[in-house]
Amino acid sequence: MTTATIIAFPVLAIVLHNAANACLLLLLLNSIIAVLIGIRPAGYEFSRFLKDYWPLHLAMASWFLAVLLNQLSRGEFSDAPFDRTLRLGIFAPVFWIILALAFRQIKHMQWSFIGGTLIAAIDAYVVTRGGTERPGNIGFIPIIAFSNMTLLLGAMALISIGWNERHEKLLILLKILAFCVALYVTILTQTRGSWIAIPAIVTLALGFFANFLPRYKSILAGASLLLIASTFTSSSIVHNRFSAFEGDIDQYRQGNRDTSLGARIQMWQGAWILFKEHPLFGVGRENFKKEMTGLASRKIVTPAASELVHSHNEVLFNMATYGIGGLFSILSIYFVPAYYFARDRSHQDRQVKTAAYLGLLLCISFFFYGLVDLMFFWNVTGSFYSMSVAVFMTCIIKRKEEIKRLQPE
Image 1: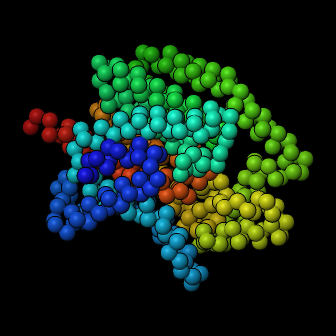
Image 2 (image 1 turned 90 degrees about the horizontal axis):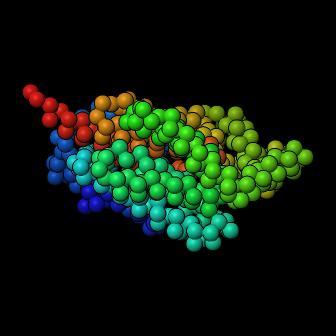
Image 3 (image 1 turned 180 degrees about the vertical axis):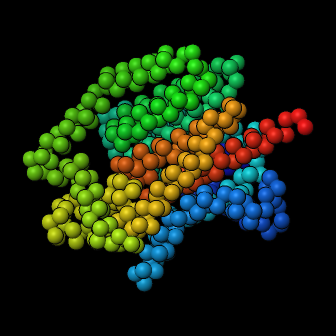
C-alpha cells in the first residue's frame, strides 16, 4: 500500500480532489501502525530517526509552532489555522515510513510525473478552451496553483531522465515532451507567476545535465533557450498578458491601484505594515482579512484590494499572520530541505544526484512560485510538498545504502 501511494501521488494530486491529502494521511496511518507493532523501516528506531534529521523535522514542523505561538499570544484558540500546517507538521512519521521502500520501487514514480503533466495539459486545454478563457479554477485547484504544479511535474519528468539509461530513448523523449507540454500549459493558463520560475528551473536543469554531457553544455544551453524563447515570443497569449502587465503599471502610476498588479502591490505593502505593527507573533491567519479592512479604512489600501484573501506573497503573508515565527517558518520550509538536497547535488552516483536535483527543483520552484502567490495556502500543494521532500530524501538515503552494500569489503 505504501509503495502504491508513493508511486501514484504525483498524478493523483493534480487529478483527484483530496487525493494528495488521502495519500498523506494513509502514510501517517501506516507509520502509526508500524510503531504499534514494532516495525523499524530500514532498521531505524523512530527516536533515532528524529535525532539524526532533527533540523529537517523542526523546519517542517515550524509552521505549526508559529501558529501555536500566535494563538497563545492572543489567548484565542481555533483549530482551523492548524489544518494546513499539519500537512507539513506530520512530515517526520511520513518520512520515516517511506524508508521502508526500496529505491527501485520509488523510482517508478517517474511515470506519475509524465502522466500528471499530460493529464493536466488535457484538462487545461478543455477548461480554458484552448487558452481563450481564463477561469478561476481548473477542476478543484486554483488556476495559478494548477499551472505551477503542472510546470513542476513537467520539470521533474525532465530531471528524472537521470534515472534512465541511454538505451531508454523512447522514455527519455517522452519526458522531454512532458516538459514541453508543461510549458504549453503555462501559456494556456496565462499564468505569469509560473513564468517567473521558468528561468530558475531551466538554470537548474542545465546545471544538472551539464554534469552528464559536459561536451555539449553550450549546445544544450543554446537549444533550451531557443526553444523557450521561440515558444513564448510566438504566442499571442503571452504577448497579451505582458501587454496587460504593462498596462497595469501605467495605470498604477496614474493613480489607479485597483488593477491585478496594483492590488498585489497594495497587499504586499499592507502585509509589511501588519508585520511592523505585530512583529513578534503576527495578527493570525483568521484575522488577516479583518486587519486588511482596517488598513482600507486608514486609506493605506483600497477597499477592493482589502477583499483579497491573502497577500500573494508567501513570505510576506507568513510575516503578517505569524510574525517573526512565520518568517522563520517559511524560510526554513524552503531552505532547510534545499540544504539537505544541495549537499548531494555533486555526488558521484548519478541516481543520488538525480534525487538531489529533484529535491532542489521542488524547493526552488515553491520559493519562486511563492513570490507572487501562496502555494501552502492550498491543502493539495502543501501535501505534495511534504510527501515530495520525504520521497526524494528517502531516494538519497536508500541509494547510498545500496552503494555501500555493493562496495567490496
